[in-house]
Length: 397
Image (cartoon, rainbow, N blue to C red; front, side, top):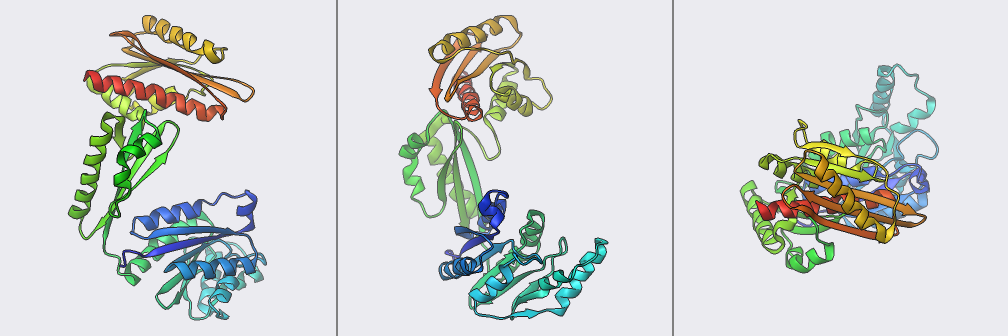
C-alpha cells in the first residue's frame, strides 16, 4: 500500500443540506478508513442535483485514489447517485439482470411487494462491480478507473456499515495491498488548555509517523497518537516513544488514556485508596453525579449526591458553593465532597466548583462567568472539579 493513499467522501441527499438528517456516515467511514491507514482528506455534502454531484465526484477523483458516495441509491426520481457516477466517469448506465433478481429476492424475503420503480436500482455504470446488499434493497457498486476506485454505498447507516466492513474494506486491502499495521492511542489531559498543551508538545505534532493531534472538549483535551508500520512491535514502540515524551512534558495533567473519562480516573484512584466521594449539584442536570455513578460499577465509592437548587449569580456564587461543600463535608460520611453549581440569567451563565476533603477541609473553589450554553458549562464545571481532585490525589499518593 502507498503510504499516501487518500480517500474522499461525497455524501448525497438534500435532506443533509436541510439539516433534517445528520451526516454520521462520513465520520464513520473516515474513522474506519483511518484504521486501515487510509487518510480521508475531504468530505463534501451535495443535494439531489446531478450537475453538482458530478462536479464533486470529478474533483474528488482528481485528488484521491479512493472516493466514496453515500446515499442516493434508492428507486425514486431524486436518487441521483447512479446517473451521477456514470456521468462523472463517462460511462453509460446498463441494466444488470442479476441485480434485479437480487432485489426481487430481498423484497420476497421481507414479504413486501416490489414496486416497478425498484427496477431502476438494477442499473449501474458500465463495467462497474456490482455488490449485493444482503441487509437492504439498494445494491451498491464499485467503479474502477485505472488505479482509482469510486465506491457507492447506501445512505442507511446500518446498511452502509455492513457493506463497508464485510465487502469494501476487504476489497480495498486486496486492491491496494494494505498490509501495514495501524494503531491509535489517545491520552487525556484535564486541567490544562489546548494552547498550553500545544506549546509543550508542538514538536510531536510535527512528526509524520506517528501522527499526533489534539482534540479539545469541555475541560478535557485529547492527544491522539496514530502510528503505522510493518509489525505490531514496530507500531507499539513508535507510540510508546511519543507517549513517554508527552508524559515528560505534561506530567500528571495526563489523567488517563483511550476510553477512560475523568470520572473513571477519580473512581479508580479513590477505590485504590479505599476512599469515598459525595457530590453536590444544582442547575447541572446531575451531570457530575451521573458521571461518577456510571464510573462506580458496584457502587462502593460514590456514596450519594445532593441535587438541591441554589439561586445565586456572579461573584456571590463562589462563597455559596464553598459553604455548600463545607456543610455537606461535615454532615455526610465521605472522604471527599465535590460541588458543581450552574446558574443563569439571560445569556449570562455562571458555574462554581469546589472540593472538600475530610483530611484538610476546603481544598479548592472557583467560579467563572461565561456566555454559553448551560449544558456545556455544566460539563466544564464537572471536569474542572474532577481535575482538581485528580491533582490532589496524585500529590498525596
